[in-house]
Length: 205
Image (spheres, rainbow, N blue to C red):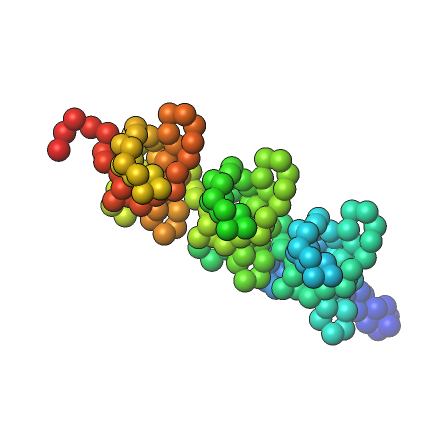
């Protein structure tokens, strides 16, 4: 009878341990689990941002991942982005955002957050399915207001573009964490600018 109780107790402990591990993974408490979907950033020194699955966690802390084509790669956790969770400043996987710069050039492309690294770097996916690693400061949200009360949806006049006076009618379509805004001109072009470069589109002073 005692042996049966001991076996039952051990079985319960194992189940409890597995349950705790699963819960830790779900709550994003820093554990890496087999079968977890992740995005691997660099492979052999080149950035790819490939979809992959964890197939093993090694004793030295490194992680083995498998790509969709079946190839396996050994890497460290800082090179993996989780496909869930949020950054410390509230940017979450699944959020829509506009990425301002890619490789130093300004594009202001529509994108979606698909992965978050341990240092809060993000992977965003563009409409053409390209994936880009970036920081939250490079992403504009399509809602809210700035500290000086310029809000998404406001009609404004942008005074200067690239140093030249134009005074074009435009609309605020997104706001960056720095307080800069993205305005859209009537021809569809988008411009990243400071709020002090904008005049309120109103007849009142």
